[in-house]
Image 1: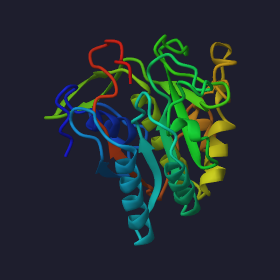
Image 2: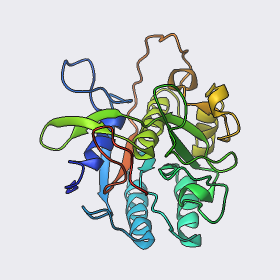
Image 3: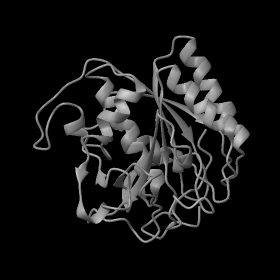
Length: 269
């Protein structure tokens, strides 16, 4: 299904970040070890796709939810340069929220201020009540020069620089970009739901209200902070042992090349 030939499995990399099984001595560990990922492909292997294709994919996930599949979180790592505002897509995100689904998306990789309408990324720029937009941070809790930001449009940051995860054909590798940041939030959201049921609005508030406030992110993001999954799920940053009994399904939109491999800077997407 993941036919990305440029990075060796962009969607597979995203999936590993969200849900790779841990504590098994193999590969990498995802944010949520016990989850189900429902992949939906709407972007071609060379990275092309239309907003109408995304809407169709989201509507398919909505129909699956209404048919009884426990979809609670959707991750979309695709944010093309120059994508026009779409009221239909904004409405679709609202409809997902009305059906108990949180929508998580990436901020982009061109170093732009998403508050500026001339360069604003969508879906990030819709700023819906049941949507979280995620910027990429580096190993020093700073935004790389290529990371998009927005003090009024981008919610928080998670690591997106030199992220190691699964690739095609049982391999592993590094990819940079906000495409790698947003699935960490999506995986954490599913993890929180395995402890306590929340509406998408409550879940968004729980994540954003429990960020780690950092001077390096102040004035660049709505929260001025980086995600703290342990704190949001009712634990603490010291690593209290915890288990959740419920599995929340993640609707994953597999994407084409939004970032680059082996530590190189992301292309202008």
